[in-house]
Amino acid sequence: MNWNLGLPGKSNDYINRMITCTKEKLNPTIVLVSFTRLLRREWVDKNGVFFDYLPDQDNVTSPHFKFLSNNNQNILNFYLNYKSIEANLKDVNFMFTFCFDHNKCLSDVLNIVDKNKYVGYFSKVDRAGDNIHRGETSHYNLAESFFKKYNDKSHNSKSVEDNGWTSYL
Image (cartoon, rainbow, N blue to C red; front, side, top):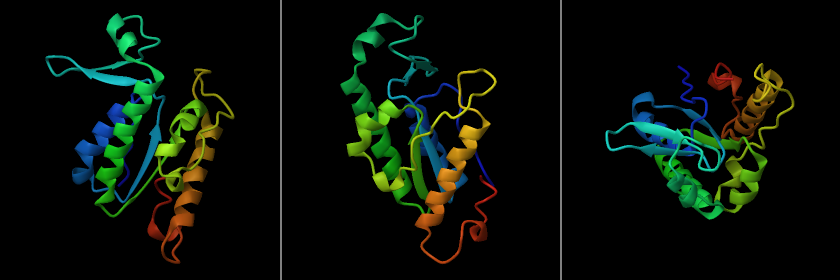
């Protein structure tokens, strides 16, 4: 069975939380993570309600979020999320890889991630119907990158197709 736990506009905090909360129940054999912009955050209010915010762009969020956000804090937050995800995925039998949706993120964090799991930049070669997000060809190219990485990482002579992974792509 395949699961896509991604949601539009979510943060790396959300990605980390979803992996932490679902990995034992879903028992995945492959996890594909698409880390997003480093400045996206998740905040929980006193009632336990989660809010997504962009400190440098959100006009609704309190000004103190803008004050608390800077490039160093963004890198630290990413590092904590990345290391948590890496630890969560280490004790089970499945592979982990990632891509970024903004090339600037990569230059900021390339020295703190496992480059062997990096599939490459998620290039925007076309646009979706909203004329903002990546389109069908861009997503196809990303799927091909994941597919190639997993075929290359195979520890036995079976191809991805032989392991039933093509249904995921």
